[in-house]
Image (cartoon, rainbow, N blue to C red; front, side):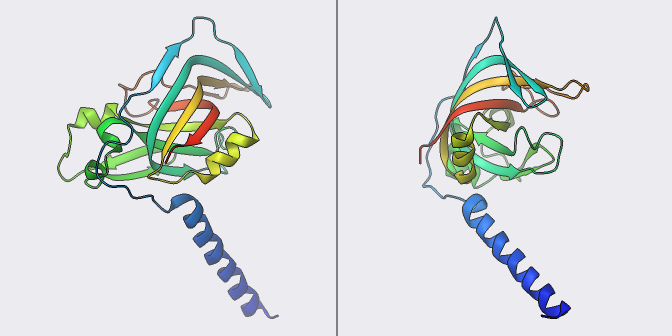
Length: 201
């Protein structure tokens, strides 16, 4: 096999891998109009945090966290500093941000650990969009959660249970969770240690 043939074979493999990745992860699920996840996250702040170890990282639990929400988008990470801890970000929506009729009028993207939305005209008020959706950095608690996370597709409704955590490393690197759904911008994402993840639909 000459160099050109090797190049073509490699390009073919990339196309096949990309197609499989899209089919498994990015292919959206479409639902009829209607709110699919009506309730906001349930959060119980902890007066006495506990600590978990992940390699050289210390995770400090800040709140018990439970959520049923629609996956608006997902983004997978392999090379940034947080990738070994939180390999996937899920942009999540609840209330009217889980309604296909509303979401059809909102363009949603993710990148560099942020979630972005854009509208030409607002289907619901801006503040409702901000308070009924969030970007969440997902830390799988074990191999079972990691395997389930790999199956999650945009458009699905998932139920997660776990903790909001802060992460620290001895060299000074840190990653803190948001503790409110009222914030936006840098620092507004939740860092979620997920003990249970179920795809509801």
